[in-house]
Image 1 (cartoon, rainbow, N blue to C red):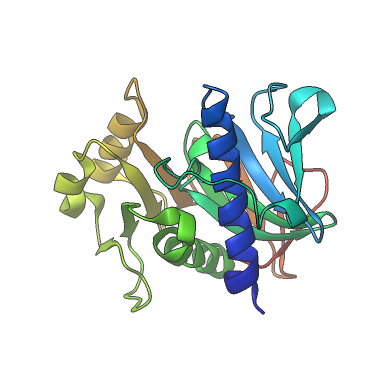
Image 2: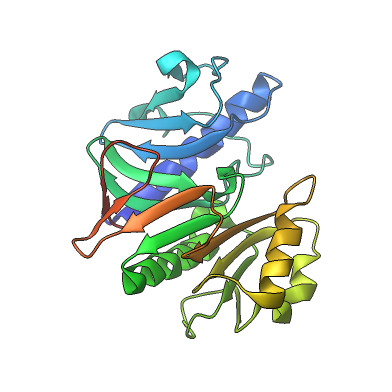
Length: 236
């Protein structure tokens, strides 16, 4: 069974179990930057240390990592009324511990994908499809700027961000993906979005200038994240 079938189910179920457990403890889901799906367990890596894990999760690295066993997910309680905690979760690839998924909403600023340009654009295109089809991505508003038409993409495809300006005003927000660094009016709109007191939109671009997260993709099929010591073998 493929990752899109079994792995995606495990990730979705784990995140729902996590959100349900946190709600039962009267607390929000933790500030997670990444998820690692291993063969027997799931790890959630925090952007902010948090040692108040709900039952079923163990805390390590002084609150920077939460872990749960995959075998408990099948029968764990899930409250479907609770929204998915990380709707902008996307797969980057494989590391020694398993499949690495990134919460793009956790970057706190623009995300730049650099290195081999065609690979960078292919990675972002793959993310755009996952952001509209993954089980935890229901309701995501995804805008692609400057990409060729893709029949498997279910969001907004525009040549310039200004063409999607009405979508940017929705209170729920979403994510904007650029095939090249934004410029001109588009850059102004990006700057406006990222300066909002309560950030509604995340931004990813090939070769973004002022980025919070930078990923470098290489022709050998690996990526450097700047978040991990080891390279990632690309498998979006």
